[in-house]
Length: 303
Image 1 (cartoon, rainbow, N blue to C red):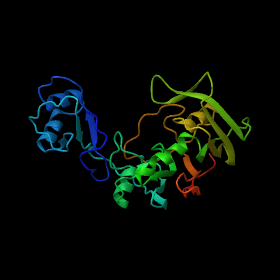
Image 2: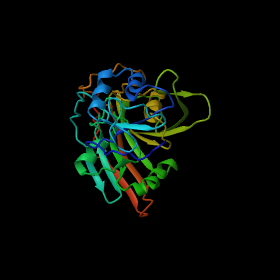
Image 3: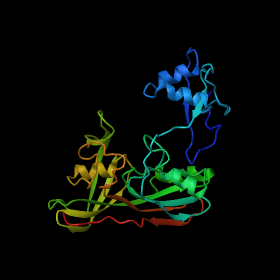
Image 4: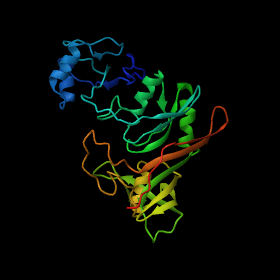
């Protein structure tokens, strides 16, 4: 039985997680959960069931001895022990009855995932502004700062998302990266980007282009330069992969051109020098021209 709407409310701005249970003959729910999540100690699931923290499709808590409910969903709240607070604040650039525009800092994830649960931009905005139905219209990488759009009224979310799907949104980014004397600017870089087989990163391959970015020079200081990036397409990691392919990888990029070891969770030094500077579009509901600019700055200093 599929069920899109959660039967239990959000907790501290974080939506509950769910698991669709397959057909099977496990003796009880606990046996399935400990097998399915082998990386989580069995004592954790036992405690959750004892404390009534795993719920059925009606929002009623399962018990420690609950039978296995095949083909149903169970709902629960994820937990990230000792989650480290991100010591940077987001600011609200604009808000009306449908739309909210935020200026995201570096290091703050957009939505819950992995080791980031409460410390996300979505969670903070939902809690601080008391907007439990707030949803992101698009995404930015955790490492990227700048302008991000959210929908306040769920009835209009699809209309705003279609703007991105049909490329009716004009986005401008800025980046600090190495300077190359032999790179004639401005330029338009087109390539075919695909995800690598061995990891989550993107790379360029032969074939018809599926990504396009315009690169312009804003300023130069020594061996570094300040660039304006205007992507026509929105492929995963497009700007990071394109600048790497041009021989000017973005300063402090932990993934391009080489995948670096993870930093300590409380290490907020060396932010990726990539900023979503502005976003512009025609509002699909009001017909108004909209344009929003980040108030953050990248620092260009001689290398």
